[in-house]
Length: 291
Image (cartoon, rainbow, N blue to C red; front, side, top):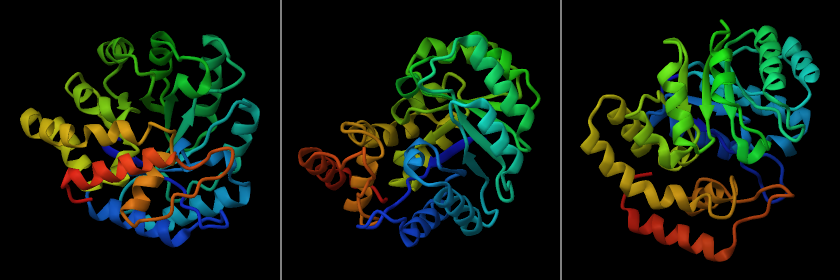
């Protein structure tokens, strides 16, 4: 899993049912614009508020729409290890190349618990596992030593690192086995840490600017620093702005401005404040970049 992955939103209609037409258009634009893979039902997909039936509908819709043109990753995680493992035993993996599994939230396990949790998941999953460390959402950080221990598991291939801690990124990159990739979970940190050894990103902004962002990542991975920096700084203010009032509210507002979908989110999330929406609109107009 190298290059640009997109953490897909789940578009909603006014009645908050899933807007599959908008999702179809979003997927097509991502693929034809050069992204490298897609993630269905990660955090950005508002997975926590989807019913089990809706989750299955989205999983199948995404894989059917993609039709193996790019790799697909299924977001499957939670804070009850037994339930996740049972889910994985019955999951329809057709069309999926890996799963992305968030570190357990709310329980706040110690490092031994996190290690054992992922070991069980990797044993039950029929496809490779990508770890997902996002302390800002889970309430606990997966340490460097725990990550490196898990990296030795034959069915764990990468980590999406969203701790925001550059020292932690570099400690993992410095000591990881060759087969194990470190993927950025922060759009605005992606380019500098590609230069430090990250293999790419699972991005939010890339679904609004798939061509530009994936080109930036590709240039960075190829060592073309100056050209990559130009795109990075063009997108930099927008990369920050879409998180000013929560995710995925910000990216959905930007996609509404672009005419891709409506900005509807499900409670307890609420749409971004009007001043944030206007700020995104201003940045979009000033950017002068092809979406």
